Structures are given as structure tokens and as C-alpha cells.
Image (tube, rainbow, N blue to C red; front, side, top):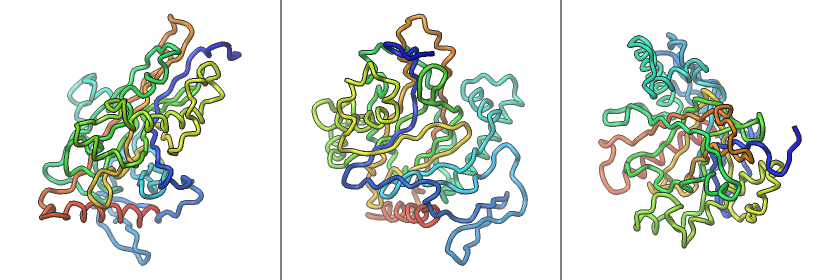
Length: 351
């Protein structure tokens, strides 16, 4: 099908992060990263230090077949941003569908609900292990389920629809001890037109000079700052989208006047069953501005108002948080110290 005036449908949603010009470095690839030996994990999760200082796991026993440990977590960024993705899916398509039904309260019987809860426990175990952050009392046990429904978007409103809330500034959602965010993708989505589409969230990295100001005046998303730096940081994210999709968007390319914006970053596309995690707090105990992020909508750009959105599909994710145990916060600087330990472990293990 030839592309005419406005291509029939552009479907988005991915996870994007942007790094400031003075801290960004080229994003490493799977070929250039140095990884730890494969993680062999059993039910005991007994840990042993190797001669290289990396962590391996006791292989006695086996986990239930529903959730599996990835061989490793693959770095998608360079420090200061610590963003990683599992080398393989944790759960199958059937497992993703089961969890979606569970959180949408569409499970057919008690047995199916129990199966979903067991699978969720297994996913928690994987996250606890690959982040080296065991679960503790007081930590959130049930993740947030987020479902993105496709929306038909008019040409002139495309940019606002793509990032409706802008970038998320309050990276630990007001919970003082949160330091890691993990996302499990339950769908696979793609960018593009016609039958090729993707979806899922934008993690956007930015300069930190405005964070304190935003915090003091209660701004949690860059859309709440229309006069200062909020729009500039959103442009960095939108510039990433433009560079990856410019061959499709000739008719709206004039809206992307900042595609060579000073801020650089990356997008993470959702893959069913895969896990990503990132540290949203820096070694100083303060929010890491390179982890400011926002979610792309599934925006369907169509010249036909009767376009069937059911053909596009949806995007579903589960969001988990890891927290520093309260009992480890013993005084000024103790939180930062614990955060730095966690960051150091991630860097020494996977980078």
C-alpha cells in the first residue's frame, strides 16, 4: 500500500529516556557490553561469590516453569543512567495473557486466579534476584498494572497526544525510599504505519538543574511546567521519536523542528515477557534526572475517522518498585549510602 498524504495509521508507545548533552555517552550494544557469566538460579537462591567478584547462584532445585531467569540483564545505557533489559523473556505469552486477565479481573475461576498469583510471586523472585534487592516487609507487593488503549489522533494534535503527561519528574512517586523501578512488558508493540506498529512508554533522560525547583513547587510532570524547561525536555524525547520514524511522517514533519535537539536519549520498545529495570535515584540519594521518563500513547494517526482501532491492539505493562528497608536508614546519609551500594552492584555485575 502506497503512503499518501497522511498514512493510514501510525501506532506508537514505547519507553524512552533522554540524557543531557553534557552527560550522555554512546549507548552500548549487546556486542560491546561486558556481561557476567550466566545466572543459574534455583529455589534456594543461594549466592556464591566467584573469583571475578561476580555473583552466581545455587542450581539446586528448580523454579516452577511459568517464570524463568534471564541469562543476564543487558545494559541499554551508560552511567550515570543505569537501565537494563532482560536477555530473554521471563514469562511466556500465555503467562502475559494470564496476568492481564488477573489484573483486569477477567479470570474465569479461583484456580486461574491462584495460578496468576503464583506466577506473580515467581516474577517477584526474579526481580529480587536480578536487582540484588530481596523483598522485605513494608515493600509494595502488588505491582501497578497499566493498559494503554489506542486513540485516534488528529494531525494537528499529534505531538500533545504522543506524550500526554510529558515526562515524569517525581521518579519515586513520593515514596522516599524507592530507588529502583522495574517494568514487565505484557505485550509486544512496534512503531510504524499500516500493519507495523509498536507500543509502550517513553523513558526520557534530562538535565537536572530544574529538578529542585519543580520539587519545591509540586510539579510531578513536565506538562506542569509550560514556562520554564518542561517543554525543552519533552522536545528531546520527541526528537528521538522523529529520528526513528521520519520516513513515515512527511506530512507532520514540520512539527518536529527540534529533531536535532541538544539533549540525547533512547527509546525502549516493549517486548512481551521481557523485563527492564532502572535506578531512579543517584548515589547522592537524590532523584537521578537522567531517569525522568514519560509514556508514549498508542496514537493512531489516520485520515479516516472510521478507522477500526480494534486492529491496532493495546499495550499492557506491570510496574514494580524496589525500596531501601526502613531499618537501614539510620541517619543522615544512610539512604544515599544504601543507594550507592545498589548502584555499585548493578555496575559491577552487568557493566
